[in-house]
Length: 174
Length: 354
Image (cartoon, rainbow over all chains, first blue to last red; front, side, top):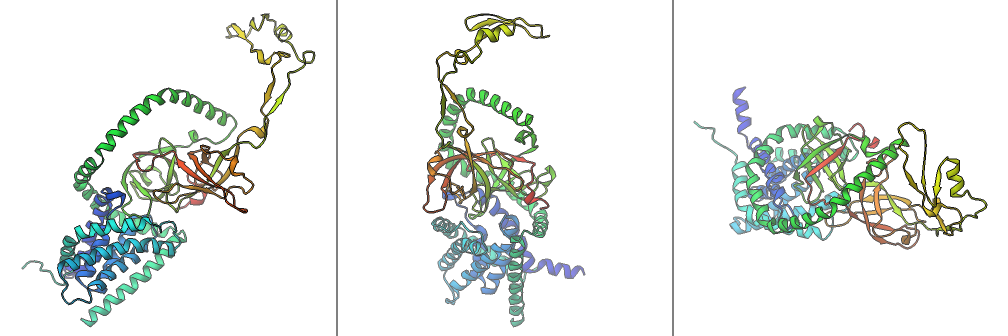
């Protein structure tokens, strides 16, 4: 029983939830306060795109769905909207690097940034689809540009964090 | 490996379907998603609290570097503004008290009769696609979903999510926000001016004062009375009320009083002014002045009690055909700089039970 519990705790999905809690707390505190040009850098979207880039399409989507549900739980938006958007962000990140056998570091960083910025364009689109109009406009380009710039800065450390979080096996000591 | 992929695919399908299910549930107004949010908040709040403490110095340093010049300039401007308004505030407070007494005497609802909770803004929205702020009071302080939120200037929004010790407030500029409002317009009729009353029909000052057992000299009189606690003193009668004094009298008829048009105020996102739509199509655009005050309409299904100050008309856009004018609204509250707020413990009937 104790061994099964230990195995569950050591699984990468449990680790992912814990890491996402920390990333989400940074999103709601530090990155909610620091607003370059008045827009919040979406560090959670950058993390999801990093997971897609550093692993594959399925893992990117799954990480996006889990992260999105957690994000929706702290926002006033309908539960599930961010989950769908972040699933697309994770998939986009994976798709950008899929044609390359061993993409160079700068291409990974670029793919993460573009996928995260794409998420900022997809968010008002998905909100409009579910009936929450009013967010589509020129402002979206500025929001995407800020997240793209944020991605270029934060992608490298977040790629390392996502690789560590989602690695298959982790030693529990001994 | 193939088994692992299949299980991942299954998990993705299940979670995607769950997302669609929850969106439908949330948009239909079900309260069950609130339970999910509260359960998640129990786990997330401690983590967020620790991160807030750790990252606060970074955020403070960032704000200090970025906004120092602005803060100094704003401080100078506000000091001047405070000095200008100190005198006006005293007379305004007296007027407000008088108005509240009159409303109470007539059995009309006033804001003074509604309890409120003071709260502090502790966070802004972490996303770029919603206009919300987080406050440090929640269900434990009696706050419920739908309650209107004000700052010192006027209405700023409504409570949309309530946790034990914090709440989320949707700002009035959010595109999802709508509220019925009243706009005070000009009268469409010309004032009525009456000629002076004929001397023979009207009572004279002397006759009025004689009947009150007073002695009079010109329009100044000294009264003598036996009313307990009343100290007699000189009373000055203005010339305008003396019959036959030769002055035309302008009588305020009911149609000359301010007309109130009702409409729906809608937010349009950050950087855009909210608008008022659905005004009566018979309303002439020139009947609404730029600068006309806009207050909440109230009513049993309204999100806010009546006469909460919202803003003033900054632009009137007349539309062709049968569509009524659209008004752009300059909010009295500065939504970009919120600190202390007041949550009115008034839950609209439309939000009851949430």
